[in-house]
Image 1 (cartoon, rainbow, N blue to C red):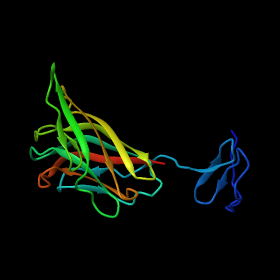
Image 2 (image 1 turned 45 degrees about the vertical axis):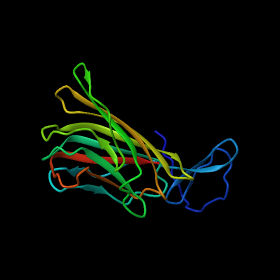
Image 3 (image 1 turned 30 degrees about the vertical axis):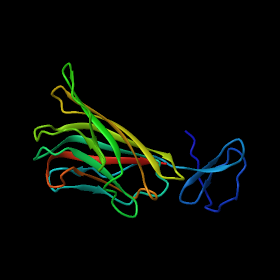
Image 4 (image 1 turned 180 degrees about the horizontal axis):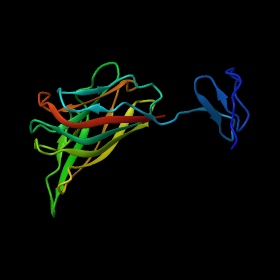
Length: 196
């Protein structure tokens, strides 16, 4: 087994093709010797979704280009749809384009839409959701994000959702809550992963 040991954290300007450098982050170069920052996937710390009306994941770095929110057995005590909101300099509460549909047996329920967040059309307190919602930065110059997700509750119900939003600046935090903002979480856990 070979081990790569980096002995200096001095930047070398624009490195030659194939070079790596270290200064808290790794950088690689393409065939044009253009330097680009290489980011690994970072996993958050799972949070028990057993109390409270919202769960926040904060401190996201400005270089994030993909965020995955993962649910494991998540439920609330009410019937309000679950939703995910972004924060840049402030929590964004409007301007989302989001749809979600429930597939159950041979029936496809009517698709619902929301503008207050990326939402999941789960409206029964007994539904314990498993799955994930993935958010991709479409355009870093205008902070446009697109999203897709799949959830299930282990009893034959599956939810599919998608959406988009344009932020004013880089996303710094993610909030998981409900549309009415008053239903409380009562089971499961939630975590995120993010990458550049």
